[in-house]
Structure formats: structure tokens, C-alpha cells
Image 1 (cartoon, rainbow, N blue to C red):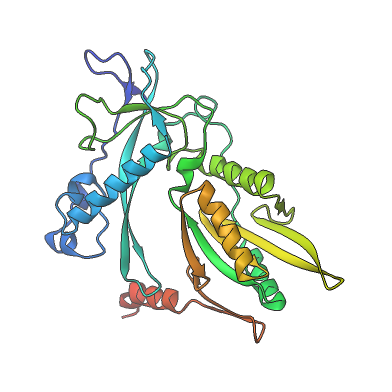
Image 2 (tube, rainbow, N blue to C red; image 1 turned 90 degrees about the vertical axis):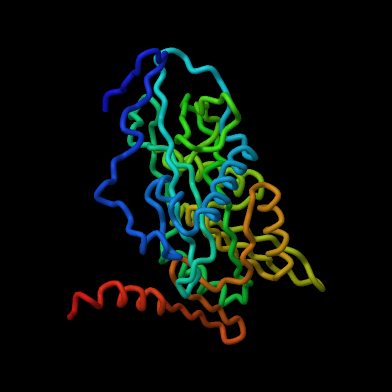
Length: 313
């Protein structure tokens, strides 16, 4: 898409940063709903949960500043500026209740050009078969299985390309700031962001924590330490499954899990979620006494039924 240059501008701002959504204007009833997800910032300012969304925006900007995602560098004449937009999502628990409102400042990566501001984009995630196998092994060996979540994961990953971005109008900025920044690290929405994050966490696991990446699934990692107790060689197992920013860890004992959680929390901003209970839309229960794993998708079935029951009438 061609860039547009307004009179007096010394740089091109890509056109159509604000998509017209007249046909998607929310009704008052929709704006009042607890789980309403605004499609545009102007609708966020009209909805019943405006203050909570504004808190989410502030948290996102604080996270960007904490991770030193961008820096103020003069924009070279003629350089491309990628527009950003706010994305609003309700995070729900296993029963479908809203527990958090997340705001993401997302790059409109469809303006990027291959070979200019990105190259490779592929990033693996753990296979469901691998996750089920890890759970089965954990039950068999009596491993403690716990969950973690990386806050704003992509903001931790450095990028090598020179990319400038512009924040949406209305975003809180210091007086006189034009809202144009040069990226030092990835942002959600960039073509290369998932790949850069995968490189970042893989380097941490392999180079710093001495895990081994499996060839059969590049998002499963293992580490086996040996020790001698009363003349007998014993083993301490640590397994990690990576699904973008969701981590599943399985260790021989609770202390080993706690130690691994502390190492992750020292490197990244983490949510330590405790023993596994709900993962990727599945309810999970691992019984180390009976050596069994129970997987259930009851809530998914309920949601599917509620979404489509009208079509059966």
C-alpha cells in the first residue's frame, strides 16, 4: 500500500491507520456488557468498563517502558513508520467469567515488506501430542506439574531490523511528544515477533539453564541431573513445554519446580500459576498416586453449544 505524505511532513506515514467501522458501531446494550471487547479506542471510551480498560492501557505502556522496547531516535527522512493500534481482550477463567481486561499496543504488521523490515517469521509451538505425552510421563514418574505465563512475552525479544512506529492518537504521552519511536525489541503484531521471542526463550533455556531441546518437538525441553544417595545413583528430571508464552514445567519434586520458577522470574516478568489445572482450553488433573491424567473440555463443549444452539431450531 502506498504511503501518504501530508503537507509539511518530512516522512511518510502509512495510510489507513484508522480503519472505518461504521457497520460495526456497537449498540448501547453491547457497550454495557461486562465482556464487551472494543474494536476501536473510541468505542472503549464509550463502554461501561472504560476505567478498567484505561488501567490496562497504562499497564501496557509501563511494561513497554520497563522492557525498554523503544527509544526516541530522530526519524531519517523518507523512512517508513508503522502505525500501532490498541487491541482490547477480556481474559476469562475456565467457567467463562471475566477475570482481567488486557490491552495490547499492536503493530499493524501488514504494512511490513518482506526483505525490508522482516525476513523469517516461522515460530514453533508445542504439539498437543507432545503435551499429552509430557503429562503421561509426569504421571508415570510422579513428577510435579506446574504452570507459568510470561507477561508481555514478545516485548523481551530484541530485533535487528530498523523499525519506527507511531502510537495511536489519544494515547497518553509527554507533552510535545510526536509518538514516533524506534523499536529496540519486538511488539505484538510484527511479522517477526513470534520468531524473535522463540529465539529469546530458547537461548535462555539452552544456554543459561542447560536444557536440551528435543529434535522431535522443538518446544519441549528436558534436563536430567544425577545424584548419589546411600550409594545409589538417582535422577532429577525437569521438563518444559512451551506454547508461545504459556509454560508447562514438570519436575521430580516441588523444590525443583520452585527453583526453576525463580530462575524464570529473575529473567522475565512471570505469572506463577501453581499446579496445573487448566491449559489451552483443557481442564487437567494429574494424579501421582494413581498415576493417571484426566483431561476434560466440558466448558469448551458448553460454549460451542451456546454459540450454535440457535441454528438447530
